[in-house]
Length: 340
Image (tube, rainbow, N blue to C red; front, side, top):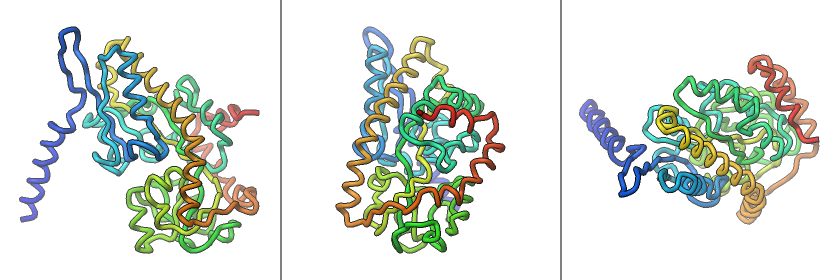
């Protein structure tokens, strides 16, 4: 009976993959051939940390290509709410583009750990400089991910991450002791929370809502826009602004699909991606303020920590430790791009 169920599940996935999820659909018109690409995201079609970024990407693709390239977006986890799965779908060619946390592509781009290091980035402009398509950091990441059949089209900034929980407000590192916290599936995050005396459990973001409801974990951490868009705001009591790391999300594309276009259309795709990323970096700064208003309106207690340097001192050894592991002097490259 179990084997029969698995058989029919596989048949269903095959039908979806070859039908609804078919990518790169071509349609001949009287003048030229048009291509419809697909994009998957866990985020809603409006709000959250993306705002209208996917729609902007589609708009730029169409305008810059003279209508030769269109984009179909699957919002709200309709393909998968697990961002690791979305990245794997891009690699396999089941979908052309996807947004997701850089943590989920560390197996392809080990140097992306640079975005997980605590207190390394200072503000939006610093992030913008480091992640520009022409920057050395971006080029290093691109070289790594290309070997896995994926192209890194851009990096966006959901925000700076802080700790939320159901137990107490966090003012000092000592307040973190003993809290069970959901961690991203990154060795940097797991080690960071252990250094703060917490009990980390690695799990996808899509599982955190239920984990908080059932008490599997007491706490999580993320940027304000994500706290709202994932719905965690409805199941937490405290949000303490530790701002220990930033959230970096990738825009990736299947490399074989990208390479299948003529050089001029490849330039269009790169430029459309650059413009979409630029929109997101402007949008998110207002979205943080709007998200904080929503968080407070839901009755969540928001507090600043007493001394951010006390948190920094607890985990500053990690930057030195992972600098050696990441290599290529990328930490130094990031520090040199910090706005003065």
